[in-house]
Image (cartoon, rainbow over all chains, first blue to last red; front, side):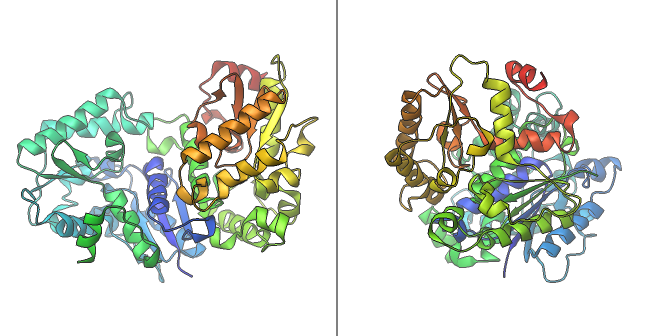
Length: 253
Length: 253
């Protein structure tokens, strides 16, 4: 039997957000129609990814490894990690995927999705908002021919909107006006740099837009939602629901 | 190390709702402040509880048992089930809690909470909305001196608001106008029967009120939220946050 595994907890809300996006993309009219799923939410095992990458903080790889093993032992066959920064090769490159498990890489899936859905858009230039760890370790770069990053000052404002212990999204488990403003300004900034598509490359960022896929004329891409769809495809593909006809035709094409 | 386990999947959104309520009641300014948590969401292992209780459907107890064992093997020390009907003695009575695990009973916790917080309210008569399985198998009765249930017709309308494959909350993973109307009418009906407090005794029902704890003058009780607080108390009690001063003083009293 196939089952989905989520290495969550980084942050906690990102793991349940991924699970909920899997549920909402599943063809189901009763509980039993849903795909079996396991979630580990063990932040104490997985130290901060950006701190490890940029400041020599504690290593998150062993904890991610442990969580993958928990998920495999429960019977998960397709596993994803609901954290962009954890996909840095410096971290993920040292995690051994357990036998019998397919690892579904959120960044690769996002790149495939953007290529399929947006490459024929008039302005298909792609921008990226993310933590400083994801930006500086080039987590997205190798999957794209070109990806536009924000200038240093804007990048730091976005990082702060995620991490600040007073008004940051992680601290509040919600979005303060100050955090919202910083992220919206950053989308605007990427638009001014010529981007027609912006990847919200940290699981906290889609919360700012409350599920919306557009900010003025800019298309917003939520890697968590793309990972949700990919995990359904990797387990019970017949159950995948995509509500936007335009997206369906392009993904199937 | 202590960790929370959730037997979820029944329905899927109820499991992540419980996890999110745990996160929002946890004192945390960074990921690592959160309590480690494991969630199983395996609806295919846990057949419908009401169908088993009332129509001789497949037995959900072995699947619940299996999920508890998964959670124990990952290291969960305090486990809850995010389904009211599963707490029926006919089901839960045959589940053996694994060694090293404390089972936190959502119904008992709800009864304690209602007693502490509402017993000095002018009208503290308690009503219950739930599935037909929970109502007919007296899941709540043994924990209360008196609990008011809706008349048959109203009870069936609420059950339908949960289960109907066209407009029910389980089918839509959301609340249709028709389902909302049926549940609001049922609260009104219990109020007319003299209740000042109404327990939303199915994990789907709090979705109708979108986190609100009042419906006109009636106090609404969400057992999922109470279970969330109890699971924090059972693992890392110092991290429990309750935002309502009135509730804090009564719980501590």
